[in-house]
Length: 153
Image (cartoon, rainbow, N blue to C red; front, side):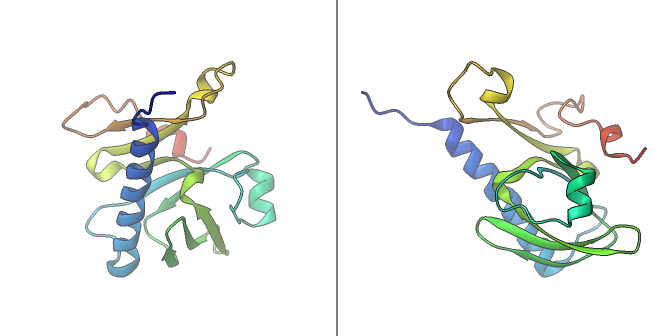
């Protein structure tokens, strides 16, 4: 079989590395200016550690907001740890970078969405990740993530 470059996997690693770099900076220096993040992750992914009541409420996917109140942000090579406030109840969480489905910073209209091809085509045996990247220079229509999906109902 001929050797080929797996651009999908390389982009997947690069984009997860971007998130890691941003979160490391926030852990060390805090959130700059109006920056804040919406991070959606797969709650069923191995290595995700959240409170049982959160897992019951969000059995497959959860979106957290890093903005006004968070503490103990620690970033490792393959995951991050953070304590978030849910109704004045601090909850520690562990989120592997491979569990992240979207990362959005609406203050600068930046978003990443990670999709596996098997999500789009169940007959496809290829599990490589497909990545969409929207930045203001590329597209202005905010197609990656609608902020309405992050609002509590």
